[in-house]
Image (tube, rainbow, N blue to C red; front, side, top):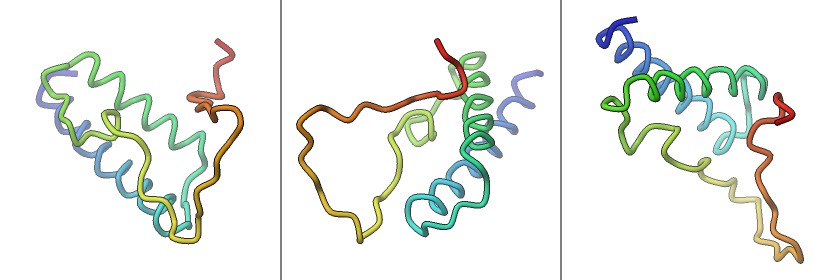
Amino acid sequence: MNRTQAQSRIERLRAELNRHNRLYYVEARPEISDQEYDRLYQELQDLEAQHPELVTPDSPTQRVGGEPLKEFRSVAHLQPMMSLDNTYNFE
């Protein structure tokens, strides 16, 4: 894949991932499985690693999550709640 093709695919992946982030975090109505989301996210990470000059601060790979639902309230945990990151690879 050349740089122009990579840039086009990266832009499409970012738009798709941003849409799915909004559906999941803001609207609470996801349309794809977590596994499918993670596949798209991994593809974006791989393309950005191959073309670091195309990484931008607004990429889904450069920020955390989305806006929480208004119904959620803050809770203090005794132990830190750590991210699972990727549950499809044991390592």
